[in-house]
Image 1: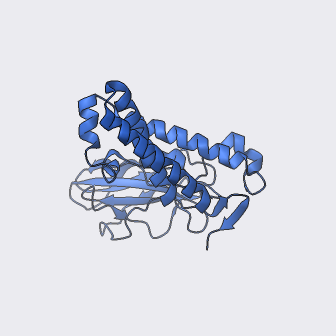
Image 2: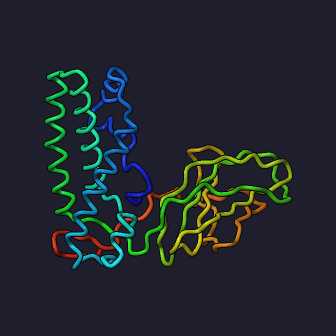
Image 3: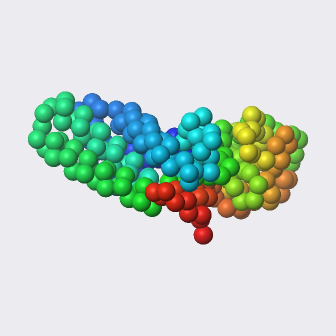
Length: 254
């Protein structure tokens, strides 16, 4: 996924680092979602500053101030940094609310861990997608005459580019196709760089899989065949970096 697709971590993913974080948030009346968003903003600004300092290695240097971090891929290192920084912000607020020494120690611990994770992220390299594809909106669903019984479908979609480029999948949506109909998926307002889209359908939210054999061209629609759902791949995480900027060097993936 790209850094601008949304928070790199969810509240559940924060529990991997701090199992009681949701309970503390409830007790102290702190909105964890807000802290995740704030951490995303602060990490994004830090990454932008890093890229602006390394214009000689940045393939998008000429337009960096305009595009911001819209081409920055969320690496494992950046994802970990974001989680630890969100917990640093969270426990800083918890300490400021109660002046509780236990929260103070947690804040100091996550401040140290976040700083280390930041250094590791920049040492490994900030990943950039050469043709960034943002997270897609949910597909627009309708139906045409067919022979399938009344069925409720769960659906997601993703933008595709040239080659194997695929953006992060959309949020889930549902569509109740009437009896004797086949679902149709369309995508509107394609972003720059997108040449097509993928459609993922399933009978439950956990079983959506790719239905089109090749990306559907922009301006075209996908119609589920009369044979019913296929069994393609599951939705992926979105784009990874094509190049990595570390220090003053640009490293190509592979």
